Image (cartoon, rainbow, N blue to C red):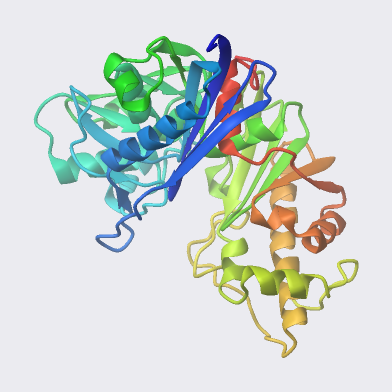
Length: 430
């Protein structure tokens, strides 16, 4: 019998798509995943993917997921995706060209135009913002008729519903949407090229529409499935980890290092690389460093990392003063496009070398939370961790010593689960 409800979350990332189904009690029912084609880099700073690749991959994933739910009825779904990945689409929703990915930094001229009009505290400033990508894509594609500016999650949601008019608080932030006033500011309108349409911005988890017949046929989902407004992948990860009250914090130890803390106050400080997402009755304040496990991968594989880490005493300093970066430039907590990595001296002992690198990244994490506290965010009393680095017990103990609080691996690690919680109506109280 297919009477029991299932709630589906999709996490559409850079390299793949994952879907998770949960029941009304948030218990996991099934999951499926598939890889995406690699991003293309046609010019320095340019990073692109084609939206149709996203659609083909997620429909494959959903068909696999639905087949694993013979006794459940998919009731609702939500999408988490990278932000500020953005594309332009015509009035029918067909892409006018490739999407510029979240890490595309090619829109320098557009960034300068925004800087001349945007408030100094707007996170829409800079060549990597969604608004800069919109202006750059307009210049490159020269659309002649009305067209939509859509984030990755917006476009996928539009394919599900047949509606092109919706985004969410979190994806729309770097396009210039004001989450406090819940509107597009006048300065955004003054920058927009002729013909562009911006989506209506809804609270994450708000019901948009049932699945369109074409999407139901492509995915195997019933047409009664309700599509709800989604979120960004990092915010979905915070939902999955269970962050809810001010002072609760989450560190992502992936290729890069991202820190977030729940705050009663909104903090926007782009000069420090800090921004806030509206998070129910609170704000999710954070920043992302270019440091992280990507630096470690250049010197150590997984097996070597585990073996060498077991030989490190995390209760003592290494004596090394590293600022591990993969290259020139840092976003947070020291926003400086010219900041050079500090990776010398190089000791002959690989254990000592790894100790210094782990310690250097942990110091950046501690500096990040200190910077957020200086700006008015709560000082964390406990930090939950996600990502590959969260599985390293030596690093966890070292980080706890430098952070001065308990550090625990988050019980739930996946952004897809956070999206499923939105679909279930749990997580952020909207």
